Amino acid sequence: GESVGLHLPTLSVQEGDNSIINCAYSNSASDYFIWYKQESGKGPQFIIDIRSNMDKRQGQRVTVLLNKTVKHLSLQIAATQPGDSAVYFCAENPQGGKLIFGQGTELSVKP
Amino acid sequence: GAGVSQSPRYKVAKRGQDVALRCDPISGHVSLFWYQQALGQGPEFLTYFQNEAQLDKSGLPSDRFFAERPEGSVSTLKIQRTQQEDSAVYLCASSLSSQMNTEAFFGQGTRLTVV
Image (cartoon, rainbow over all chains, first blue to last red; front, side, top):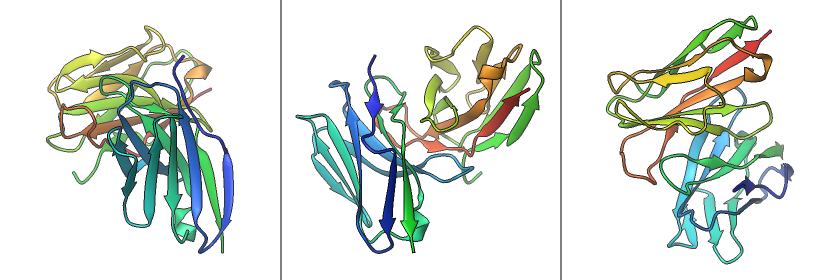
C-alpha cells in the first residue's frame, strides 16, 4: 500500500552541527507534507509544512526541501541544540483530512 | 483551553474490559482526528470528524472501536472488549478549518495498556 518511509531510523549529531533528516514518500497524489517533532511522553508537535507547489520552505533554524521527481522530503535543522533531541516524523496528506506518517527518525544531540 | 486535552493520560485495562478515551479539542476547531501510535512507530489514522459528522472511519481496526463527537466539540473513542494488541498511545488532533492542508494540533495522548 501507500506509505511514507524514512531512510535513517537514528541520527546522532554534535551540538552546533547541522542535522538532515530524510523521508521518502510513495503517493504521488499527496500535495501537502508536514514535519513533526515528538518528545517522549508528548504528542507530535508541528515544525514546518510545505505544499507540493513549492520545493523549499524555511522557518526558524529549520528548512524543508521537497523533491517531487524522486518523491523525497528532507528536514534540515541548523545549529542543532540538545533541545532538538526527539523523534521526527514526516507526514503526507494524500486525500481527505488524514495524515500518513512515516516510521520516524530519532535525533540525538551530543553536548 | 490552550491546547488539545486528552484524558486519562494513562489507562490500564484487563483484557475484555471496555474503555472510553476522551478528547477536548481546541475551542472552535472544526476538524478532529484520532490516531493510534504503537511503540516505536508513527501515528496511524483511525477516524476523522468535521463538526459532529464522522467523515472517515476507514482506519478503525475492528468493529470493537467506536468514536463519536455528538455536539461537534468533545470526542470519545470507545474500545469494547479490549485485546492486548489494542495497547498503544491514542492521539487526538484538531484543526481550525475544514479545509485540507491546515495545521493539526495534537494532544499528549492516552497510553492504553491491556493486561
